[in-house]
Length: 175
Image (cartoon, rainbow, N blue to C red; front, side, top):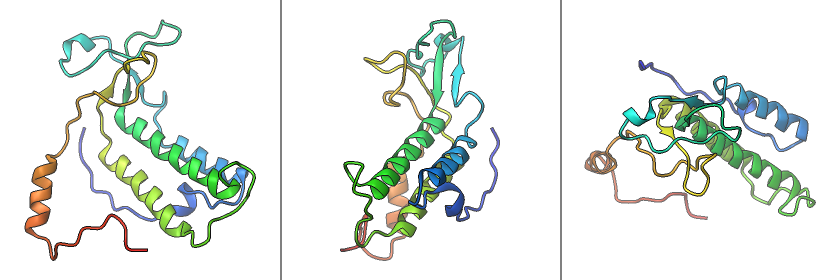
């Protein structure tokens, strides 16, 4: 797989909910679905036993599709969309589904930026790890226990800290 240079751009109107209606949310869902390859990222790997880092395959519910794996980036994209959709439901309908309130101080622009930015980051990195079946759920995957090829986290931390401008580290600013 080759690499390409991609400049992220805000696509908030296309890929994030505006918290107004089911119709708008369904339009956004369709755009996310269009990002997936045909088959949704589930692939058949007949020679999986020849690959030392592949765990047991996902078993097809019907049992006739062979040894299946889920490609990580499609699973990651699914999880991010799932969180965004759940957030949209809570913002529009409240925790019980009936309040139809937006919390005071809600910053939908920042929230939508984060969802869109993470969507683009997943698509930029497209982790091709093949995720097999999960313990207790051989017909699906939870994504855990599979070998990923990653940048060395400690080396990345060292590189950043050698070039830092101060010692402040906050995941989110003060309230």
